[in-house]
Image (cartoon, rainbow, N blue to C red; front, side):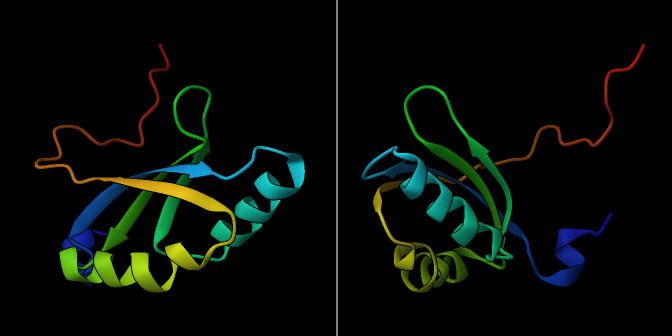
Length: 99
């Protein structure tokens, strides 16, 4: 695993995405677009309030703002983006609870 601070990717941002429509073509187009975005390190199709939940890593808040303007907002059929910025990482692991 890479230490994000050592590669100047200190900021983790979570973004909730709502699409204009949930038809298969719109969803698939979003999925294909987001797979091409290296700053998005996780993308989850959600049941519940939003359509997708993203984990994004960037250098800092300004880098995220530029990413949102120039990359995320360019993806077709996004209706809304809600950004969540964590204050502290309490726990992050790749271990699985195998007993």
